[in-house]
Image 1 (cartoon, one colour):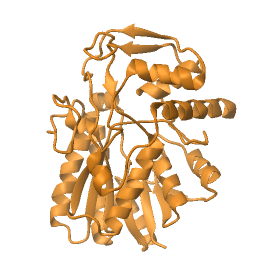
Image 2 (cartoon, rainbow, N blue to C red):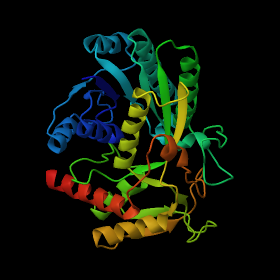
Image 3 (cartoon, one colour):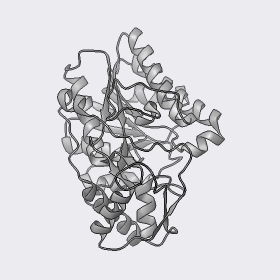
Image 4 (tube, rainbow, N blue to C red):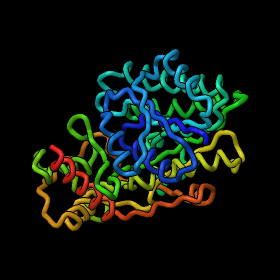
Length: 342
C-alpha cells in the first residue's frame, strides 16, 4: 500500500484530512509536524476516531537534511498534502521574515524532496486570501488575484507561484492548489477540532470559547455594511468537507484524471453567511443565547466574499455538504469535549 505524507498533520485541517485518508483505507499515512502551533495529543484523537495509529515526525521542514531522511525512510511515498505553515495574520505583519522563511523554505524543501525521490502528487493548502478585495461575486478560479493584505497572505500567493514555476520544469511532480474559504466546525464525534494555541483570530472558535465563559463577549466588527443584515458575509465550510476535498484531489492526481500538471480549485459552500446569521446558527445549535456587541468596522475587512466551487464539483466530484447549523453544532460539541478534558 502506498503512503501519503501530510505535513502539519497535527493541525486543524491536517488532522481531519488524515482521518479522512485513514477512513478511505487506500493509503498508509504519516505526518510531519514540529508541534509549534499544535499538540501530539492530536495523534491520540485521530486514533480514537479511526482506530488507527499513525507516526508523526516532529522535525522542522526548513531543515532539508531532516526532511530528506523522512523521504528516504519511506520509499513507498506517492503523495504529499502540504498544510504546514505559520498562519497568524497579525503575527505575520509583526514578524514578516519569520513567515517568509518558514512558509517558503518548508515548501521549497518538500518540492526538492518530491523531485529527488520521484514522489509524484502534491496538494498545496492555499487560501481565498489570494483574491484580496473582490469586486465581482462569486469568486471563481479566474477571478484576479491581487496584492496580499499581509505577509501570511503573500506566502500563499507566492507559494502558488513557486509551485507553478516548479511544476513547469519538473520531471516527476504534478500538483493541485486548493484555495479554500473559511474552514469551521469539528469532527462529528466531537473528539477533534480547532484548538488555537493563543486567543483565536477566527469567528467560530471565538464564539464557542465565549459561550463557554473562557473569553469575553464577542465583538461583531461592523453592523452597517451594505448587506442583508449589516454584517460582513463570509463563505463558511465544514472542515470535514475540506478534508474530503483534499483526499479527492489526491485521488484525482493519482488516477491520472488531471489534464494539466498544475491546477487550481476553489473550495467553498457557494453561498455567503453573515456574521449575525452565524451567531444565530450557533444559538440554535447550542440552545443558548450568545452575548455579543457590535463594534466599529475592522480595517482590512472585505464586506463580502464567497466562492463559486463548480469547477471542483465538475472535475473532483466534490461539493460541500454540511450546513452552517452542522458546523456550529460540531464546533460546540468539540468545545464541550475540551471542557470535559480539562
